[in-house]
Structures are given as C-alpha cells and as structure tokens.
Image (cartoon, rainbow, N blue to C red; front, side, top):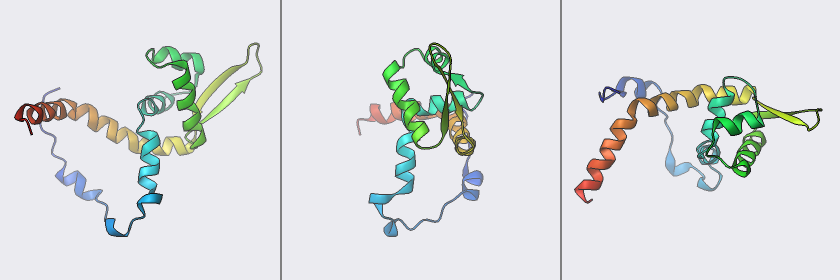
Length: 138
C-alpha cells in the first residue's frame, strides 16, 4: 500500500444521498436493519466467498479456519433468512449441503464490493488516524 490519500470528493458527490434525518423513524430504519446483518464479523466473508461460486459447508469451514461451526451455521442461516444466499441439500449419505448467492445477494455484493475495495485501499490510513488520535490522549 502506498499510503497515498485517496481523494473521494468527486466520487462522493455523485453518490450523495439527500436524507432528512429529522423525518426518519429510527425504530424502523431500513439502513440499520440491513447493515446490522451484513456488517457482522462473518457475513461479509461469507458473501465475499459465495460471490465467486457455490460452496459446500465443509469448504466454507476450511476456508475460514477461525470460525466455529456454530457461528458458521448461524451466519449462513441469517444470510439465507434475509434472502442473500440459498441452501441446497443433496440426497447423499450423509446429506451434503451447498450454499450459493441469490440474485438479491449478487445485487448487494455489487455495492458491498465497493466498500470492501475502499477498506483495503484505506486501511493503513485509518489505522494511522487511530494511532494519532489515541496517542493525542483525546
């Protein structure tokens, strides 16, 4: 990473949202509702993996070795519940299960990929800003 500051002024102005925060119902906020799920520790990794191709449960488990089986199961269920992925059970002994991204998941991933790319490009800058802030004792 070069450490260069990425100028997003021109890009940000083209995607600016005009939202009157005073008129929002924060108890029924679509942004909070959606971000709560996709912002989870494991959800983004699952969506990233499944954006490439379908995977079986065991493949996903090996791909992310520090996720527990319970957390992987819960994350996949949550993503399935929201309609981002689908689960197919194959009639083998023992039964095998494959997960794939739905059309809704692919539409989400198009936007999510922009955020993931931004995070990778600016991670060093954010970490440096945190370090400056923490060392200033604010």
